[in-house]
Amino acid sequence: MTDDDTAPDGGTTDDASSAATDGGVALDPWGSAAVDDYPKLFEEFGIEDFADVIDETPDPHYLMRRKVIFGHRGYDAVAEALRNDEPAAALSGFMPTGDPHIGHKLVFDELIYHQRAGADTYGLIADLEAHSARGMTWDDIDEHARDYLLSLIALGFDPEEGTLYRQSTNRELQDLAFELGSKARYAEFEGIYGFGGETSVSHMQSVVTQMADILYPQLVDEPKPTVIPVGPDQDPHVRFARDLAARMRYFKVTEAYASFELDDDERRLLAQVYDSLADGDADGEDADGDGDDDADDTLRCEDAAERLREADTDEQPWGADQATTESLLEKLDNAGMEPLRPRVRFLDRNATDEAFDALVDAVDGEKRVFEAHVDSFDLDRAAAEALAREVEVDAGGFGFVAPSSIYHRFMTGLTGGKMSSSDPASHISLLDDPEEGYDKVKAAATGGRETAEKQRELGGKPDECPVYELYAYLLAGDDDEFAEKVYEECANGDRLCGGCKEQAAELMEEFLAEHQEKREEAEELLADLDVDLDVAESRRSITPSAEE
Image (cartoon, rainbow, N blue to C red; front, side, top):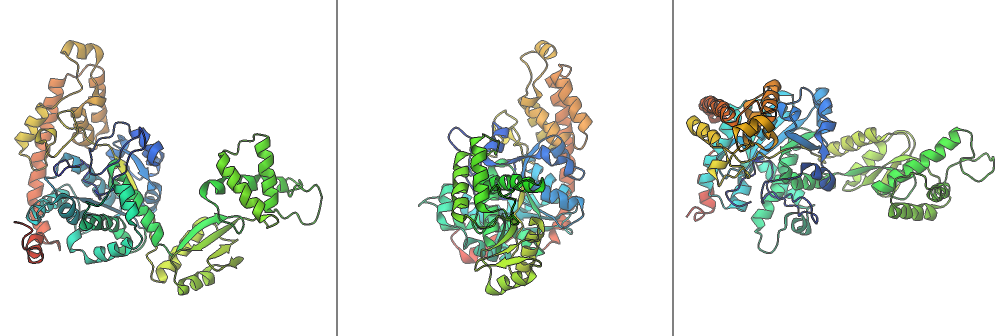
């Protein structure tokens, strides 16, 4: 992004850039906030379809129901916690480079939804990033930070139940960032963000601070499922934070079948092979395949190798590629007569000697202890994960749960291009005079036909219409029936653009008037909060020439 081109999500982080694959979709938090092919994100970046979890989500927000929120990473853990009234958290943040606008309202609404659903909710001002990555002065940052917080509170965020903070004044956050930095490598900043010799150290530091933001809710109280609502351009940050969270853990829990380690693809393949062998044993067949009805039918690695080769010859549908099959065969052949038996494995990643000994003591039932791992034959994966986290936290570790995320579509600019803070006509600021908001909607581009006659005959194109987006994302509120009515009337040719824009303009004018009244009411609440709104003064004593 340039200094004045702000992504409409204003998401938690704004630092990771992920180079597109050849011919693929670029996810660049500093670049153009536009995605032409949302389904392609599922394939290229592993983002999951939100439709898969909406039925598990308690009282889903209208942004979820209307598929404005289209994707997620690991949100099922958050949804389960909310359903069961278990600890969960939501966090997102805002880089104060300009006025908050209707694109930012998407994230405001998502935070408020999760707060009302029972999650511990955090809103942060990414002021360190604004200063280091955008060169914003601290005076401007203070002004914009205040505006973001006022709008968030005015829209319904409860500051007494939630937490608001600034990166620059949160020492606990900065200490966490320092610890996370010990697990981050410069090569990752190059590969993920495109950083090079011209990148300032403070800019890189702000990235690690944003990783700390994402994990901060788990530091405050306890490890818990945490969702980060963002636009898809912020996904590189989420992936990096998930990686760092795993690297900070004392133990990694995996599933194994023998002494050797497996990657995920090998593990899936071996599970199928093992099940086929075990099923044969259950049916009274010669499970080890040696043709003898011997007393010892222990399954061994060589049995699995033989079965895998038979399956490959018979073209049975194991679903693994050739490279995975060959690498697994090599491991099985090397293990030979070693018994093949499912177990859960605790791998020592960062554990202290005391923590490792505590884990050994805590694993009940049959187990085998090795120098750098412990195998349990009685625990399932979920129980092992819970035990590993409990031991880690008791021993002074973080025990982070991998952070989750939800992704919303970008709003189209009112002029038909992307929504940009550098183009006032393309967006509506939450600080705009209501009359100005009315005028901007009236002047907006539409998905209508060239003439009213063609509109009636062919219908409009609501899927390409910035004005319909205003209804779906904001103006229809929780009224799905109204949003659907506008869509259908447009698509059927029963609604013409002039009347549609007039209705939208009036609703926008009403929304802005009400919102700004609530902002005034929020002034008193904000004044009572422990949030420093005058960081510029203290920063001048550190960098006296920074504002010159």
